[in-house]
Image (cartoon, rainbow, N blue to C red):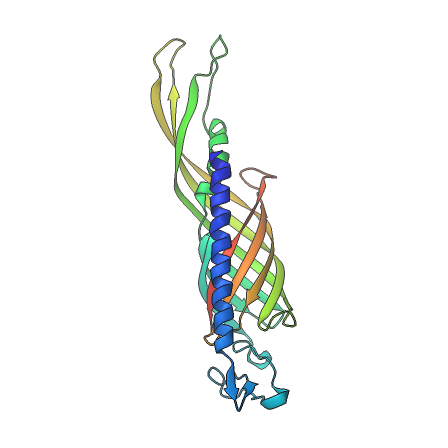
Length: 253
């Protein structure tokens, strides 16, 4: 139940963050419109002195950040979710981008998994009556560092909304976790239980698939993104997999 509660709490936070990001994006996008004689005009001249101005009845929506002739671009920002990370994105061209994320995994989402792995981390024995010599008591994640490298393919979906892009890609994830386990044990059958403690390190790695959306129609050079990742471990627990992801902002230059 605690595991389910943690996941529901995490999903509520993600939904709230998504709502806040895209609400802010909508408001700022509306402010990007400049009225000239009752007719709308969009321009990138604040960030690009060579931008073409389109006026009057022929006015069209123009993203104020990305311009085909100005690639490559760079983006640095923060990602909230699993993991909570600093994120760097290299926009090689309008279709291809590369991402590096470095940060901390949301350890609370893995409490049940780490508890189940306790008996694989310590030598155990069973008494003649079938009773275990030791029992899991609790654990504490002392560090949970994560790194991700991804290659993304972008699809322009501006007909849906100006500045909106859909992307998908593949990547590789590394995660280094240090866990402190507390447990109770008996040296012989019938003895009083005692407390013990061990520290263990886990290194997981494996491929990931990525899908997401990115929105970049602001008066300031930032982009907002939301993505979902599917990770499969091939190191510590081969075949184990789970969904990850989050939302974030990057400063574009």
